[in-house]
Length: 281
Image (cartoon, rainbow, N blue to C red; front, side):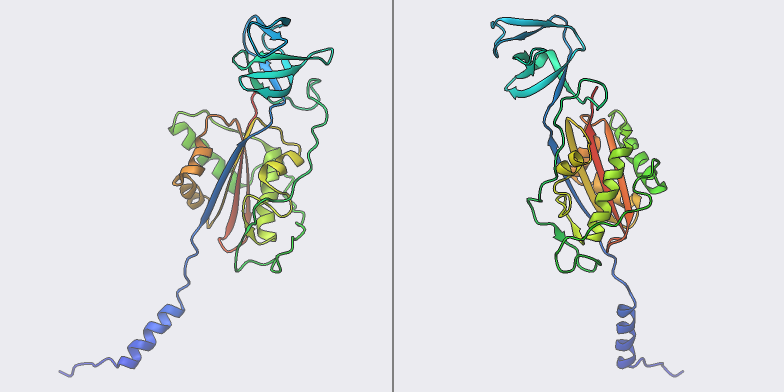
């Protein structure tokens, strides 16, 4: 019986063909950030709370305030809040007698002058080779997306929202509520990263995620952002949960609301933005 001899040249050519026809999988990428925002309002949580003329419980009492009253905060001084009195004078209330809250526009208690202009980014965004747009490093004006202002979640966004709350439930953390205004901002951020060819919390268009939230009228006591690039929702969620910083944002009991924006595009297949806020009442 004749033995078949494989030519070394044929073997080499076969290996080259296999390598050239195999497309390498682009690994996902993730990043997280959070901050405590400026406290504009506090709600009285104690019975018999008192506003004094200085940061001391031995100071003169200026006013007794009922529980659940909302006060406008001027600034925080260690364990005290400086609050504006009805006559525009300043008094002080200890932080253990109240809690920070978010007051929405239109309820008569929101302070004036809250418009914020987005600042320039303080950290250079990470460029993503292989993407289109922004190749010369100049900011690209984001194109309006037909679903950016949609008042309902896409299937992918709903899937990620469900996974986030499942993870919180498994860790005995209260579920997050979806905030559609925040979701619209998250969608714009995801599209901005694709259009401007970068991966960073700092947008060349909108600045930091916190500047961006404020410029779109989002109010919060604490806020955070997770961003990721990945092929699908399940892979993105797994990658985020396996990273300590992202996991901390997802499971933080401090947050009450989430916005999720997912856009198709970029070298990772999809761009994901999760924006978290604490909006206690």
